[in-house]
Length: 140
Length: 414
Image (cartoon, chains in turn green, cyan):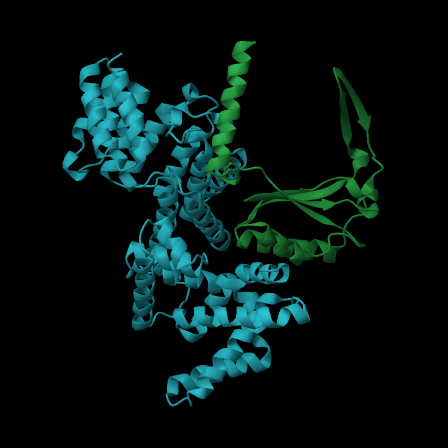
């Protein structure tokens, strides 16, 4: 299964405090392990939201909002994409990650939707749903 | 199973292959190494819930396994000199804490040594594949049996025999160097690709794909590419598998029916895998790769980069097949070459090349009459096309492919 692993932002990351050499080395070694284990698919660190923009949608309206954004704990400071066998494996790997921030921090693991997630029964339902939608759109 | 237990097993799974690799090299016995790794898991399951997961779980498990091995050896009173020697080496490593250092330095190498040993050319392809899935991939014999559509005792026996053969030959679980590595690498890559293909193009049964095997092979390929980053064919194989796997979900319709490459919804191709495949391919080409896997990856890439089927650069594909034929002569390559030429230069060009293929070399091979049917159909020779499709349908063992071919035969009537 494919998961996206989010490193949540902290006040330090939002200030753009650069990581220490030790942190960079530790993270480099961790990434190397991920590659050697064959699970690393991609990933990067993200600049603080002072460099970010948001586009808000409301009906036909589009409003552009400039960063920085306030709700620090909900922001993302970096991500990986991993291919793992299950969530247990993903959790085991995240536990090995050096703390990415100088202070307390959080890493969140979110599985991607994949066709493999849908068993035969669900596929049949999904197919039926698609057929029904198609029939309705033809009827209208 | 409670959460702690699951967490411990997940940690163990990450360490298992390297643990077995380290132990196998030390004991020169992969069977015993597997047992000891399992013992270490049992010890961890008993201790970690109380003590917590150690900071370096791999080294902890290795130490536990070694201690267990040492105890067993001592109990046997170490009559044979060989055992004394091994015990001595292990004592040194164990007491000096050198084991942990050695493990950190040599991790990749030991795993690679295990892969090369499990894929030793003296073993049959099937035995290599089963043993690799077992000791490197960590699959159970039951999982391997289901994946290869065979019985569990067959797989178990295959693995036991392979382990015995390795022990008898006295293999050292080393990574071969220089010319020996070059000579033995193809046997490793062959196994990885066999595992991938078994998942990708299930030759029998009703499921068109058994994606679990593909994932296993891709993971092995990624591990190999990380451990042997300077080998173009390793990168070529990885690129080939990533690009082919990108189409897994587009290869069958909602009813499970097979969809050929040119008719697939390209929006369902996995862009991340394509990107990773193209990246591996460009690294392979940069170091001058032009072996069979690199060429096959380049072929797969031609399709991956075409936004629509009609954008496919068939002339380039035909030229790549001309080259592939030189490095990997086979009637299957010739058949694909004929298909490429038919797309680049017209169905008559394809038919002419088909006539040159020694049909006797591909007895009962459904894709051969299927291709002939397609060329004839496109050349407007519907009647002949229909019999070719019917012949192909009679030959295939895959139920979904058969339905597809029968539908094409039917379409010749219209």
